[in-house]
Length: 70
Image 1: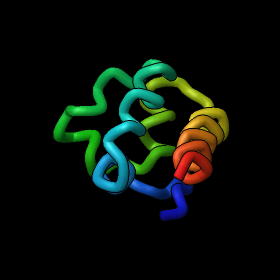
Image 2 (image 1 turned 30 degrees about the vertical axis):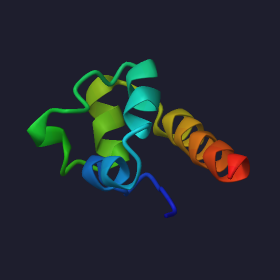
Image 3 (image 1 turned 120 degrees about the vertical axis):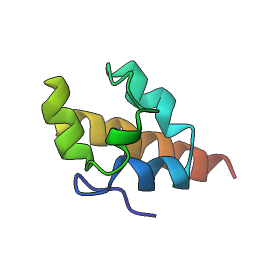
Image 4 (image 1 turned 135 degrees about the horizontal axis):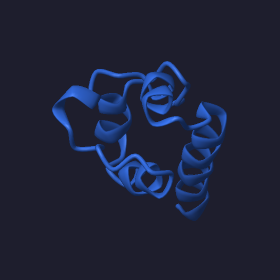
């Protein structure tokens, strides 16, 4: 799966629940909130005052490191 700023929170978490930890490290503690599931990564970042590019970088690094470990 390719995660972009338009990927919804629900899609990311369905793909890999470990992404929740990455999001929480950035201050998104509402990962389990039902209303956040339909938000894109970019929308969720705007709500929390976060830079979507930085959060996306962390998520893609996490996914890449898991693929490399296999």
